[in-house]
Image 1: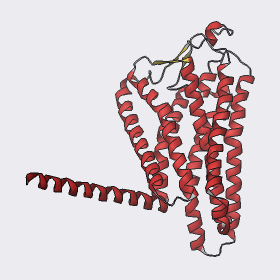
Image 2 (image 1 turned 30 degrees about the horizontal axis):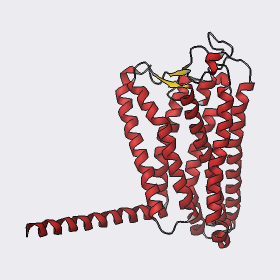
Image 3 (image 1 turned 180 degrees about the vertical axis):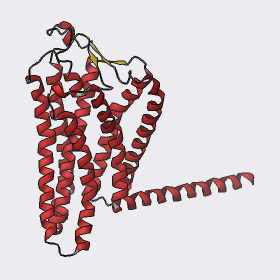
Image 4 (image 1 turned 90 degrees about the horizontal axis):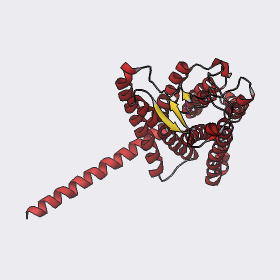
Length: 336
C-alpha cells in the first residue's frame, strides 16, 4: 500500500539531521514492564553465554579450527545483540516510542545486516570445516591451517560489511514518507522500505540482491557440503562411526536452520506482504531468542565445548580456592 502524504525527495528527506520515529511496542502499554524484564533477562543470559564460550575458547591453548570459528561466532552474536537489544529495551521504557536520527538509523541497519551477513558466510566456513574433517580426515590439519582459518574469518566479515553497505546506501537514497514513523523497534530493512514513497519494484531489488548474496548462495554452499558429507557417510560401515561423524555436525545444522529459517521468512518476500505486527514478533525471536540458543546448542551438543567449559570452570574454582587460601594466610599473619 502506498504511504500517506508521500512527497518527492527534497532537502528534508536527505538531511542528515532528519529523525525517524520508532513506534516500538507502543500498542502493548499494559505489558511493557513484563516485556522489559523478560527481554532484559534474556539479553543478560545471552551476553553471559557468548562471553563464557568466547573466554573458554580463548583460554584453551590448543584450538582446532571449529573452536576458532565458534569464537568468531560468539563475537558476532555479542555485537549483534548489542546493536539491537538496548534500543529495543529503551523503546519499552518510552510510552510513545523513541526517535532515532537519520545517521543512527542507517548505522543500525548497516551493522545489523553486516553482522547477520558475516554470520551467513561464517556458517559456510564452518560447514567447509566439517566437510574436510569428515571427507578428508587425513588432510584436515594441512587443509584447515591457521592461515586459512584467519583468511576465511576476515573474508566473512569483509563480505558481510560490503554487502550491507551497498544495501544501506540503496535504501537510504529512497524518498521517504513525510511522517517517518517506523512501526518497529529498530531500523529493519522491510520496515524502512515500507516508508518509501514508491509503488514500483526497483527499490526492492537491492534487498533481493542482498538476499541472494547473503542467504541463497551461502545456503547452497552449505547444502553442497552436507550432500558430500552424507555421500561420504554412506561408505562408512560402522554405525558408531556414522553416529560420531553426525554428532559433530548436529550443532552446526541446528544453528544453520535457525538462522536461515528466520532470515528467509523475514526478507525473501514482496513488499506487499509486509505485516508490522508479525514482523516485530519474528524479529523478537530473531534478535533475542536465537542468539540465546546458540551457546546453549553448542554447550549441550558439543562434547569438546563442554569439556573446555568444565576445564575453565575448574580453573576458576582452583584460582578462587588459592585466593581464599592466600587471604586466610594474610589474615593469620596480620594477627601476629
